[in-house]
Image 1: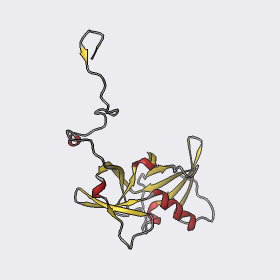
Image 2: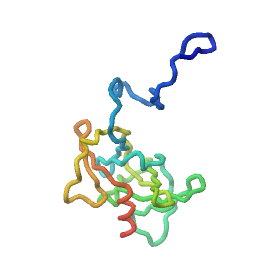
Image 3: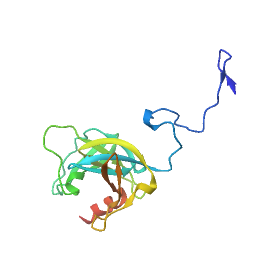
Image 4: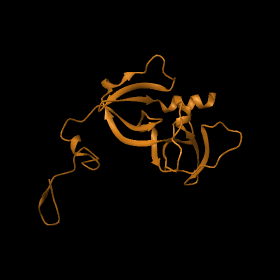
Length: 174
């Protein structure tokens, strides 16, 4: 036990580095979860999730520059702090498209260890970051796309888990 400048006893920091910062009231009290954290979002009206460890940041509209003779799903490239970011229309890849209009879009930016490039996936709506127990994540349906690695239910809604590495690999085949 240490003392503050006024001489009052102060407890040492806990082993929980994050402390209570960023936690919501419904997150406490309870045991530390052994689950996985996901960033959940909406594309084409459907719910999706990506492992938060693959995400470097989430940004507002990047305003990419279009490239000639590229597929529709490739929105273009953008400059992000002197790094080139490839901007991909996730709705187009998943079989739909984002609603038209002047809405501001969000981008989930990823950098995989196997590549030295940033990719920003444009999404319709960013929802939240959630922790799901590993036992609640079910295998992907047999008819699913190769980059869909599982699914889970959260607050009575179904989410499809996207394996970002496999999704990026599938882009090379297109």
